[in-house]
Structures are given as C-alpha cells and as structure tokens.
Image 1 (cartoon, one colour):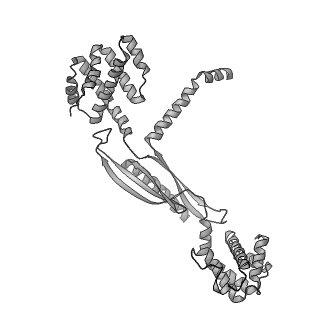
Image 2: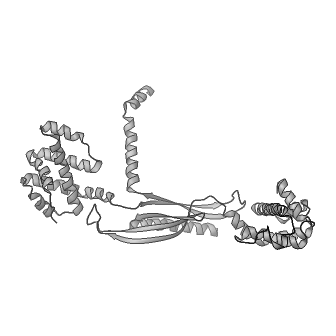
Image 3: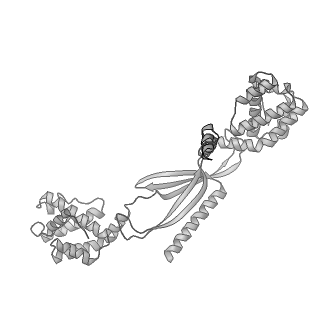
Amino acid sequence: MELSESVMKGLQNVADPNVFDLKSFTIFTELVFDSLVSPQCESVLGHPELKHIDQTTLKHCHAAATTFILEGVKQNADKSTISSCLEDARFQIERVDLLYTSLQKNKTNLEYLLSSIDTCPPHITDAAWRLEYCIKNSHLHKVNQPSYLISLNTERGGASSEINFSCTMEQLQDLVGKMKDAAKSLERASQS
Amino acid sequence: MLLVLSEEHKEHLGFLSEVDSAVVGEFGRIAVEFLKKGSNPKIFEGAARKLNVPAESVQHGVEGLMYLLTESAKLMVSEGDFQDSVLVLGFSEELNQLLLQLYLENRKEIRQILGKLAPSLPHYHNLEWRLDVQVSSRALRQQLKPSVSLKLVLEDGESLRHLIQELERALAELKSSHCRRVLRNIK
C-alpha cells in the first residue's frame, strides 16, 4: 500500500505514546471510524478527552488515519499489509491490533460508503400510474380512448425528479414484459 | 350533428359554385395536401392566373374547404348530417356529392392529424434493458455490484415533427446548386 509522506508522518504521530497515550489512542480510533461511518458524530477537534493534544497535530492525525483506513478498504488490504504499513509508522503491536479490529468491525459499512461514490444514471425509485379515458379535446371530439399516464420517480445523489409519459394498454404490457425479462435475467445471473 | 357555417364561411365557399367541378376537385386535393403538409400560398397565385380570378378568391375557397373538412372531422359528422349542413350553400347535387366524397375519404387521416395537436405527454415508444455488474471503481476496487440499466425511449409529437423537418431539410440540401456542383466534380 503506497502512502504519502504526510500520511506516514500523521500515522507516526498517532503511534507515538508521547502524543497519544493508550486511552487517547482508543478514543481517537473510535472517533475516526465514527466520523467516516456516521453522518453526525462528535468532532475529533475540541473533544474533551483529546483537548490536551495540540489541535493542529490532532487535525493532521485525523486526516492521515482516515486516508489510511479508506485506502485499506479500497484495496481490500489483508491483515499482513495493514500490519506492515502500521509497523513502518512505528505502531506497537497492541495499537495495530486495536486499529485492525475496528477496521474489521466497520469494513462492510466503509465498503458500502465507497461503493456509493459513483457516477451513474438516475435510479428509478417509484412508479405511479393513472388510467384515464379521453372523451374529447379542443381539437377532436368523440376520441373515446383509454390511456395510461405513468410517472417514474428517479433519484440521483439525493436530488429526485420525474419521468412522465403516456401509453396505451398494449404499450404498457410491452414495457412490463420487458422489465420482467430484465428481472428474470438478473435472478438467473445471481443464482449461477 | 349539423355544422353551422358562418356567413363569411358561406361567402368564401360560394366561389366554388362559380368554377367547374374539375377545378373544385383540384381545390379539394390542394386543401387536403395543405392539411397534411402545411399551406403554400404560391399555389393560389398560379391557380388564380389560370382561372382569371383574384388570388384572394382562390385562397378563400381553399381555406374554406380546409375549415369545412377539419370541423366536420373534429365533430365526426355523419354522412347525412354533412349533406344537410352543406345544403345551405345551395350547390348543385354534383358538387355536394364531390364534397361528401372528399370528406369521407379523408376523414380518418384528418382526425389523426388533429389528434396530434392535442396537449399530450411524451408517449412510450420502446424500452431496452441491460444487466451490468460493476467490478471496480476509482473509489473501491474489487466490487460486485449488479444493476439493470433501462433505456426508456419516449416520443413526443413535437420532437418527431421537428425530426422529420430537419431530415427533409437535409435531403433538400442535396438538391441545392452548390451540392450538385460538388457532386459533379467528384464524379
């Protein structure tokens, strides 16, 4: 795993018992993972248990630790890779184990977080429909035809929007048929 | 349901009884063409010169026919009601029959054209789908993220008409003198 000089320096500070005693290290590690996984959490800076540490150093350490953790998850690094990186930064075995345990505990959530950083087309989240019967309009009388109005709700990065369109019964059957084919294909692929 | 023709409309259509039935037939054909493809005022001048009448009379006659056809098609006027509505114009039996035939032959198509004018949402045309599996990204290597991509093809009256117009314009370009010169030189 390649890490920048700045990240290595930050990790070395985290490893240093003169900067973080064991208790502070434990709290710090917990806060670092929380800051990645929970949207609202206590801030590392200004935390009562970490006030005795120089805040600039603390900020640097937080950045280094989060970078290291995310790199590890991104590359699905195994225990020996993680351990050797931390040992290079002069981590004691006890601290390596503590960090690695927290990493395993939070790995799934972190993977989910990273996999959602994505550019992709909007996702369809919901569908609403309306069946109507047109009797006449300003240009044509005696229309007497039923039609569907479909509204697909889409979301992309928190912003939602709608796709609206009309169709006849046959077209809706065609649409649903094709979606069923896609679903069957997905099911088959997941079973094989 | 009977059509009620305004005095102005009756006056415009009155011109049709002053020309012979072959001309009325031709006007009818022009009226339907204009409904399908849009009007072309130059035709009025040509016809007016041949008949030795003011262009305005020709224009009113053709436009009167167009309006008669669209109103009858819109209301889906029956054969009998159409004949009764046209009686008030005092035309000859031959002319009445001609107008009736013109209406009956083109009614369906005119209704289709009118239908496109009504407000509408984009219309479903086709759905294509694709099953994907994302295996890696810049943010996370070694993933297995299945997804189904859908391509919903919608068609709305405006964009289809616009598309047709653009393509017709493209075809017309080939016929321009500049293009013809270039093609001649390539050969």
